[in-house]
Image 1 (cartoon, rainbow, N blue to C red):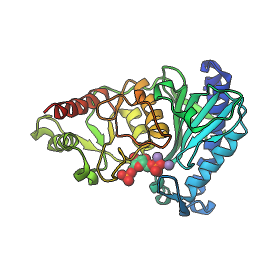
Image 2 (image 1 turned 90 degrees about the vertical axis):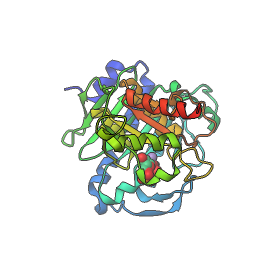
Image 3 (image 1 turned 180 degrees about the horizontal axis):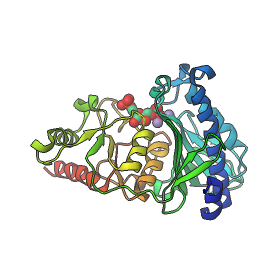
Image 4 (image 1 turned 45 degrees about the vertical axis):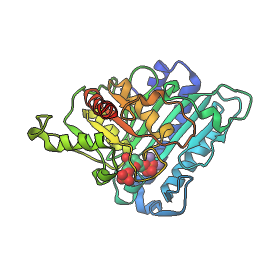
Amino acid sequence: MSTLANYLDAHAKDPALSNVITTVTEVGKTISGLLKKGALADILGEAGNQNVQGEEQKKLDVLANDLLLDALAKNTHCAGVASEELDDATPANADGSLLVLFDPLDGSSNIDINMAVGTIFSILPYERQGQNSENSDFLQAGNQQLAAGYLLYGTSTVLALTIDDNVVMFSLDPDSGDYILINDHVQIAADTSEYAINASNYRYWLAPMQQYIDELIAGKTGVRGRDFNTRWVAAMVGDVHRILCRGGLFTYPFDTKYPNKAGKLRLMYEANPMSLLIERAGGAATDAINRILDIEPTDIHQRVPVVLGSKNEVNYVKDLHVQHAHS
Ligand code: AHG
Ligand code: MN
Ligand code: MN
């Protein structure tokens, strides 16, 4: 039985990286414990304020953010953190070699109803050791990530992680408190019949996305010639986990619902880490046309349309968008 500690000892080339991943995953145990207590830990409900993106913060958004921030600030290898819940990046230890970005609690609308939520993280190199990190230090393309992963707090707590060209999964053993390796080589099939989208936004989508979903709904009776099935967790972390387990397509596409915003999901601490996991498991991740990991960020909170999962399906969506652009 291999633990996360064994795995990191054997596979992480940089001890600093192991150390920072250990800090994040230890906080994950605390968050997991709080979620298990639920209402009994007084973690449910609104915090009563908004984050920089104008979204209402839940108590657990704030708590999870503070737990990660406090733990990483004490880690000598962490030069700074950026979070969905912090307006600006926070410098940590100037001599650190790593920057950590996170969505402390993904799927906030699921907290109060006892459904799956998660923590998403991305680790980037820090190039200006000795000086305090700033927002601009975090503006690196996703292809620069040294590691990425998520913790899914579902019926069990699962960690998905990539620190090399492989994706692995661990399950948190509630008895020993250790993360135990459950899959040492996660792979996504190229074809799928399962897709995830919030279809209530249909009228805000671009024409090629409307056409794509029309084709899936037509199933056997349409051009695809076979039936498709919808699955939607309402937390990206849950939908991505399903895709890593059994394939599928997840999209939060470009829409016109929020003017001046390219989509709902955030590039740096949602789309990039998930895209790295998906690509390394053999899938694909685009903004409908372009590879997400190659986008040069201009803002730590920028949004991006996301289409990810089984490769052939992601490419099919891309072809529809390219055809529409040329018609
Ligand atoms: P967050 O809770 O961090 O704000 O992210 C929620 C995101 C994502 O996890 C999910 O796919 C999407 O929002 C669901 O949004 P809607 O239900 O509003 O469409
Ligand atoms: Mn999120
Ligand atoms: Mn969040």
